[in-house]
Length: 55
Image (cartoon, rainbow, N blue to C red; front, side, top):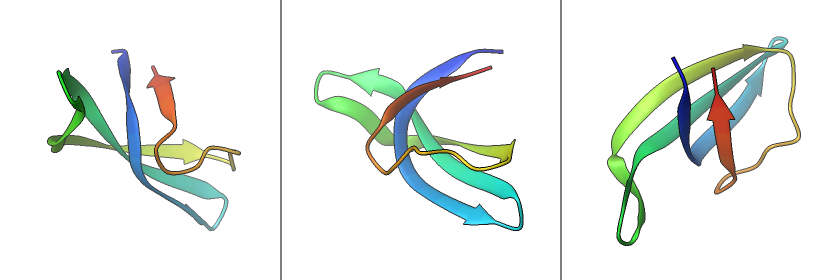
């Protein structure tokens, strides 16, 4: 699966990065009512409000 969205919240914890990602785009940006949970092994330089694509 492939999702593109805006990072609502990001947290590094014990070698894992946890991201809450808003994935539904509307006329005002990304809808914060449609969130997916992403766990990434390792750390990233991403911050809140970055637009990212995950696979």
